Length: 191
Image (tube, rainbow, N blue to C red; front, side, top):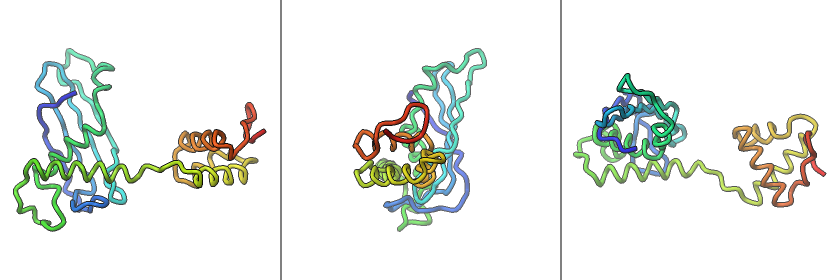
């Protein structure tokens, strides 16, 4: 989906640095995006910065034309990366995102600074991704075995501070790599 415009709804919270970049952004910020096409939905997105990384906290899709409903195709066109790009552009344009060496926002924003801020936001988000290494899988197997009597998947999730489904993926990969035996049907453990 291509939005024709934005209306910033950036909060006035304190500014914090984006991880590994020269930009300061509000700790909590958002943007409302709209299109000029008939019936196109409006999208509001809210981000919060945790440890220098912008995390999506809320996405709201609203039908602007009351005669139309929001359809699957409308929601499918809402990509977080695209929304982050649009929001960062709005932040830079409104001087809500500032370079660390220009904390008062005196430099006039331009396309180059917008692209730089977008790159910085994506790099910060990419830094959160965990690479599944052999070392990680060995550790997953150890934690799983140590907790096999009581919710081993949850123990893995808690240890790595990940969602249950991510822990299940780690366990599956540990089995595929040979660090855990084949699963027992219907219960925790290994063959």
